[in-house]
Structures are given as structure tokens and as C-alpha cells.
Length: 285
Image 1 (tube, rainbow, N blue to C red):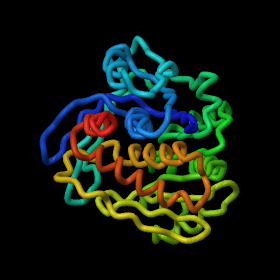
Image 2 (image 1 turned 90 degrees about the vertical axis):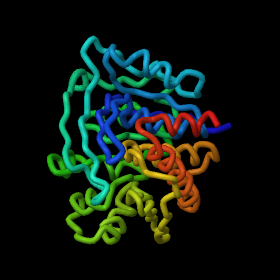
Image 3 (image 1 turned 120 degrees about the vertical axis):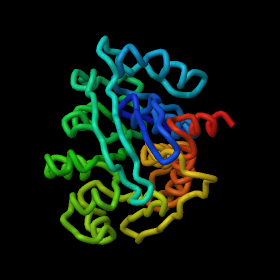
Image 4 (image 1 turned 180 degrees about the vertical axis):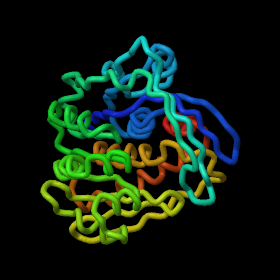
């Protein structure tokens, strides 16, 4: 029987522009993660969305092993993220946001989410990640962050990372966090710091790399016919990674490489379409 997984993250309306056009869809880190992880285990989601998104998320999770009791519905609108992706640099060329209901969220895990054996702290304000962590009884804890939070609260972010087992960051985020100018050295410098046992470096079209005390492994990106929208790929990668660990009930270092390969496969599902459609198709297939 697989471990249960809890995820605390965002539920957002994404206004995304890529070379393939522009499209609005409902996503967010918790949604992408949950759809990827639910292929392997039951997932309990925690976060906030506006009443304008409630029916969409309920329909998105319908029939899947995703428990959305922890999804708070606000009378205010859902957070909106406006982004333009640059496929030449594999980065965002512009971003802006309408924060909507996000600032009013106070994390409160259900008892089932508290007792889940695995926990993913998606990229959130550090004080929210801390509030979730303090409520969890998880055995396997994974965490993500972003440049905005690392730059503003580096010591707080580092403290949270060192109380987790697995870290998911990009090369740029790692370099900012550690001050190292080379991402491999940056990843190695974090392994073994207090609880942290594994650093996963998200490398976009190049795949991902996994660093543990035993060494490092590079995993190439899964081939797709065409990259349409990279939004949510990193969260899907984390979902596949923790889902694989939960399905096999293993969190030893030797298992993390296999988990990363599965995560990379899930990321491929995320980038093949706009929004979360590719992940849901993969889950149902």
C-alpha cells in the first residue's frame, strides 16, 4: 500500500504566452504536483482559490485519488499570473500578477494531510512553508522555492531547506542561495546539511540532475513531439518524484535516481500542452 502524500501550494489562473500562442487556464504548483503524483498514490492538497475557480478544480480532480478538502475557497478572485515564456533562453521574458485571494490564506492541514507520510512544500512564502511544516508528521519532506523568496529571506529559506529531505531548485536559484557560481558545486555544498539528503536541479530542456552524498546522476529530458508550455513542469517533476517514492514506500538515497527518472517523465506530460491537460490525460491513460 502506497504512502499518502500531502502538498501545500498554489492554485492560480495562468495567463500564458509562448511561441505557440496565448491561453488562460487554471493551474498552480499544487495542481500540477497533485496531478503528477496521483498516478502513484493518494494526494491531499492544501491551498486557496477564489470562488471563480472552485468548479474548475473540483472537475479537474474528479475521479482521481486527490482529496481537495484542504482547498479553501475565498469570495475574492483567484490569483492571476501573467507570463511570457522565451523559448530561446528557456526563461520568462516578462511576468506580472494579480494577487487576488492569496494573501488571506492561513495554512491549516486536515488530519489526513498531517498524517501523510510524504509532504511537498511547493514554492510559497517561507512563513507559509513553516506553518505547514509545523503541522506535518511526514517522514519524507521535499521543498521548492524561488528567487524572490531566496533573495528576500535567504537565511529563513536555508533553514527550511535544511529541515527537509529533498530540495528542488533551478541552477540559478541554487547559485543565489549558496553564493557558488557553478551549480554543481552549489548542489554538492548543500547535501548533508542537517536533514537535507538530496538536491534535485531542474534544468528545463536538459532534464534534471540528482545529488546525494553518494554522488550525482544526470537524467535527460523525456522526448516530446513539441514543447508547448513549460509552466508547471518543475512541480510535475516533483510530483512524479515523490509519487514514485510513495508508491514503493522508499526514501533511501539509492531510490532517488529512479524517482527522478519518473519525475522527468511527468514533466514531459506537463510541457506537451497548455495548462494541466497533458498531465490529466497521462493520468487517465
